[in-house]
Amino acid sequence: MERPEPEPEAKRLYRVWKGSNRFFCGGRLIFGPDVASLYLSTLLIAGPAFTFCSQVISKIVDREKPHYVRDPDQTNILGLPVLIVAAVVTISDLLFLFLTSSRDPGILPRNTRPPESEELFDISTPSMEWINGRTPHLRLPRTKEVVVNGFIVKVKFCDTCLLYRPPRASHCSICNNCVQRFDHHCPWVGQCIGLRNYRFFFLFISSSTFLCMYIFIFSWLNIVGQKDHYGSIWRSMSGEVLSLILIVYTFIAVWFVGGLTVFHSYLICTNQTTYENFRYRYDKKENPYNKGILRNLRDLFFSRIPLSLNNFRSWVLEESVEVLPFSPSMGIDIISPLEKIDIEMGNKLAISGGMPVTGLLQDLDFGDLHHDLKKDRHDDAALELFTFSANQEPDIGQTNDRSKASVTQETAATQCNVEKDGIHADQRDVEGNNSNGTVSVLPDNDTHDLHR
Image (cartoon, rainbow, N blue to C red; front, side, top):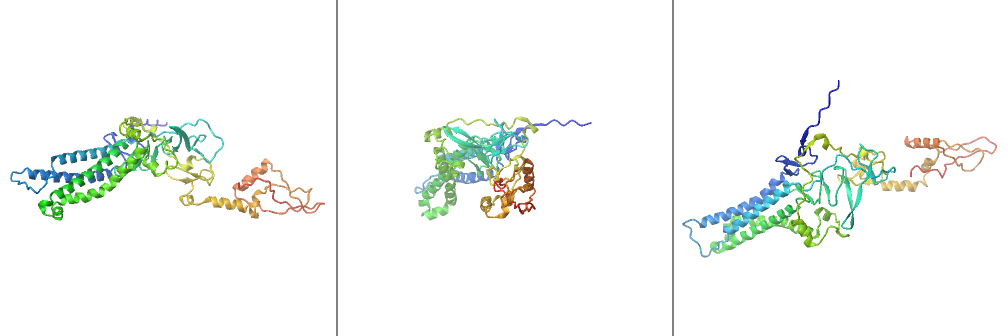
């Protein structure tokens, strides 16, 4: 008696999610796999900001002491207004960092099976591939063309997520997700930057730039203000060690975050992503997404952020989210050995029969080999053997003429078996004892070249 199969257990979606993300607070917060870098980024921001605020507080407390005597040559730059602004900017900066890192950047839900094809193809071409081994009759094109603002844009099929990516979407190899309007994966925030968190990312780097410049300026003003008290600028720098350290630190940091702010300001004004800019997408053609500076700024800062396409706290059956991993040996159509398939997670070569090619052979250039074979076909007698029919019989009635063999279906089948098993027919002269003398059988020049 067979035991009944156990029913699939219902689980939260974030517990069975196939991506590399890490979830907290019951799936309410989603981070990238490198979320640990968030602690480093927080320390690099909060450390100097806390040091600066501590210095300002100490100056304020010293001036509030009863025995404090104000020096007429001393300028008190660091006061309560400076402290308030520094605290507000620091808290805002850390908040933008957290919002960037902890929210769904625009992850596209995965499909459990490839999309249905509107029409089936009987003839395999290098541009057609078998998408899933469970449906061997289904072939889908690797790319499709869609119209965006009057421009034709190609979209790729994702072998991991089993979907055609929307325009500007890309698959992040670190998070293992397709992300809408993918910009880049930022290691400093430990998250992909996409459609739903790009606004907070820009606010994060711009506020970091402002904070660095703010601390740099007021640290210099503090040293300059204490120059008369200490007697010289060098003694003032020696007496205000914290201000000197903050000047050096912020000077170095502002080049990094400031450069990012300027670069992304340019991307926003031209409505590009980092991914598109690094690939020189719009150097020689017009950007279909550019609406002008004002509309680009309005769409980014004053438009409503789209809702997440995933409810990571929803209940799902564990088997309902199972997706067969894509494997070239599992369902690739037979393609030319010279054809390279552009796969998002890595380039692979396939040979006849769908067999994968090792990494060593992927770098070989088969084009020269193919050219040499075609060139030597007319010079090398050995190659002519492939055009000789295996079961061809000589025509005894003719002498000293080339035989024209008629290839029947049985002969063609035998010829294919000869090629498959690697058997090379030997060229021989067939001599017959007849009234006309000896008959020579030469290879038929009109026979189909099996190398083609």
